[in-house]
Amino acid sequence: MPPPEPARRDSAEDAQWSRPECQAWTATLLLGTCLLYCTRVSMPVCAVSMSQDFGWNKKEAGIALSSFFWGYCLTQVAGGHLGDRVGGEKIILLSATAWGFITAATPLLTHLGGAHLVFMTFSRILTGLLQGLYFPALTSLLSQKVRESERAFTYSAVGCGSQFGTLMTGAVGSLLLDWYGWQSVFYVSGGLTLLWVCYVYRYLLSEQDLILAVGVLVQGLPVARDTRVPWRQLFRKPSVWAGCSTWCPGWWPSRPVCSVGFSLTISSARVMGLGLSSVFALCLGHTSSFCKSVFFASASIGLQTFNHSGVSVNIQDLAPSCAGVLFGVANTAGALAGVVGVGLSGYLIESTGSWTSMFNLVAAISSLGLCTFLLFGKAQRVDLSPSREDL
Image (cartoon, rainbow, N blue to C red; front, side, top):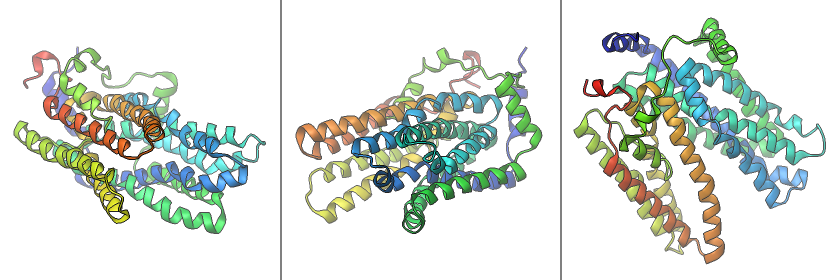
């Protein structure tokens, strides 16, 4: 017989981080997200130099660059489920160990034979598979360990690492590329990730917890809490479909505290992150001025950061008991939409001979996503049994 709801709630509160623990984990996960993006964008930074060394044409270079997302799309749901089952911090640590090692070893793969493209493609697919576990596991971790009133700030702070990592690799990676060759970018980003793993293992996780997590993953040992996902119950709710479907245009912010706060927060954030952003995207497609193009592009992309801070927080409000796996479903939709969108954009540019059609498509999809969420999005918890939904 499952424990009564008040006892379950008290147990969840006891498992949450204290303020010092939350601060330590927030700083650590910020750095981890930064390193995740450092390793992710190493290949794009080095693509030109690698193409010259290996004699790749544009098509072959495109295969190597896109192969990351072939793996990334496949492990989102698995990452969320494993995070909900054994703890997101353990999944993050184990996956980071693997992708850090693979990144650091990537230049060595080129010495295994003449099939450089095959080895690099295989390496990037593996990296994508492993990094696909990260954000769903992170969402599961924060839903279990962070107080509800602090989740938005915590996730926003951790999410900043994606921008920092991209900027760091673009700046420092370019210098390493110029001074020491493209191999150094992979060595440094992978090596720093492994140092980060050592720090987390040494200071933030106990060896017993990690051994238990490996036992659960390898041998299927039982876990202390129920991790079943009420799929039928979840996907009968329009708010869940709205939350998942709006991943396709991009990241979505929300931090509802109550129904009124939710409406105000969603209205302003969605309008800023998608509505106003799409206006600048439309303007970008109808100007020939370089300065205006830079301004419109910067404004459109900058406003979309309003979406980043709360995308997973709304999932945690809807279904905190299975936030990781539900985030994985939604993020898979976003990743697949990104793959399809790239191909569709290329087709539009090729057939029309103009960038305007692509920016019109971006604005249309963003507007559709905004309307969908404003009509159907809610913050009411939906993973409880019907008899407890009003508690």
